[in-house]
Image 1 (cartoon, rainbow, N blue to C red):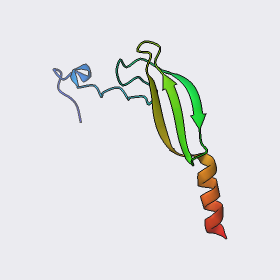
Image 2 (image 1 turned 90 degrees about the vertical axis):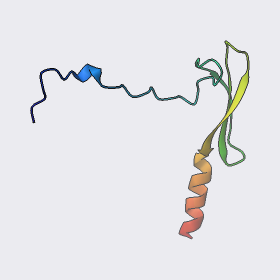
Image 3 (image 1 turned 30 degrees about the vertical axis):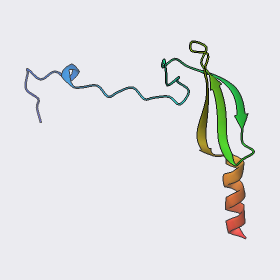
Image 4 (image 1 turned 120 degrees about the horizontal axis):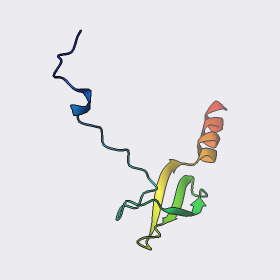
Length: 76
């Protein structure tokens, strides 16, 4: 299929940039990781935004060791 001469690929709407879990929800700047905690079976990380000075706890889901432990238990 041949596109019309007036059609320009740059006129298409661009997709929104992907939101990073390490971006501050307040000011959208990148945060610094302070702590990683997996003892609860969840991958919980604490980040601090240098601009705002606020700390945010981000849950990245099931910890790797928990997933491997659960898989081993189902194999028995």
